[in-house]
Length: 265
Length: 255
Image (cartoon, rainbow over all chains, first blue to last red; front, side, top):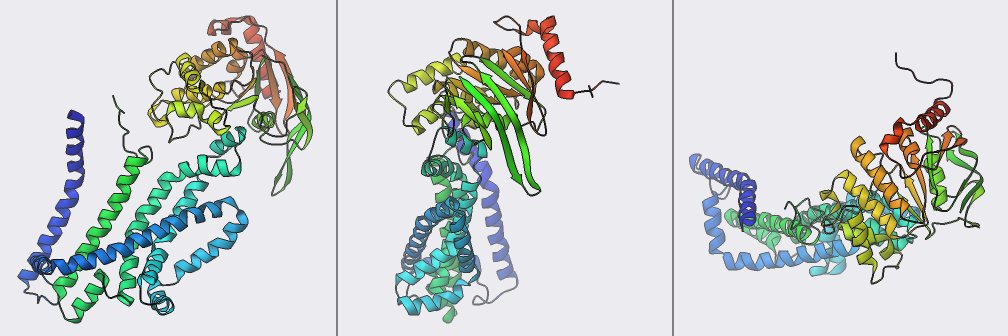
């Protein structure tokens, strides 16, 4: 088992500086709050944030699940729509010319401005929140996938043609696998953005979720709880990002630069 | 077997059409090893791609066994300068990829692929990913991939161009060894004159802008070939002739 202990040690060496930096940041924050006696409703010390968040844990957890649901549905919608969309863009110049301006328009509209309109149009339910999350998250995934599909080396395309592969075969068996690292690059950004999108939607219209919790907490100057919700959101973003990275390592070991099992004998 | 009949190729550019090939005619017999040598821009890769059916000529035609080549054919296989392996597939799956793509992979395909890899000295590497192999090994995999299709014509576009000089020499001899056991014509594009002379039965020398056949030179050296033959007068004479054709009157001379 020597290689796996070595891997764990290497993993620790890699993550230790990051953890140390976060701990240091919290210590400085705590020091400033105590040293300057800042009032808790302006800037609560981390210890107070943790204490109050733990005290209200069942409530925080309920809102976390609500937000996570929106995030995952929006993220799933992004994946389900972005990948076929990217393939359409790559497969035809005319489609690309027609779709790209539309994509750019969806990106130039501030989603905060769109959210109240969607909620009026679609009703105060999960659907408008998922759509806002999708709108925030899907763009980098489309752009990344298109870049990957286009980045396939011309020799590989020529090899496909020499083997008499049709356009669909070329797309599915050469271009798409080649695009996998790019797709995962887009997925990582989309995962982080999905959290942003869900909170934006919750700010505008929701009766649950961490965005809603932050708003209601601040309305009553329960600043520590709002900070707690922000930290939960950050952790959620990090975990989603890591889940995507882990999926890439497990399913496509050649893609992520991780050594495949059995390598380096 | 291959008859290239007065082909011409024009490429559209911003400044109008550029003539890449003019009036090129050539014949390759079954089982023959033909090398095409020429300076950059003489259209030798274009010519190779026309034989492969990857690009059509503007006029004239390429005939394979008497029928015009209009699209890639099962009888031809191609090896590129870059190994162009699929980064996500292991060595074995890379070698069988063309057959799987053409839905011609059968029960014996994997065994044949393993046997081919063994002759290329790649036993034990079947499950490795391309990025774990050296450049020379990757190109060997690419050659095995082409050979597994049992082509009657192997088209090679500067296959050893990206390799270091020592690997290159080793690979040339290996290629000859593999070719000698088969009924397979090879069209080998290179810009190395010694490589062309060492490998080929005939060397087609091309001149650039527009690409034309300057001369076809018969290489009168016994087989099996080896690097010792480089010292023979026949080798030197052929290499000198090719050099003179390529550089024309302006033979480069060291000061």
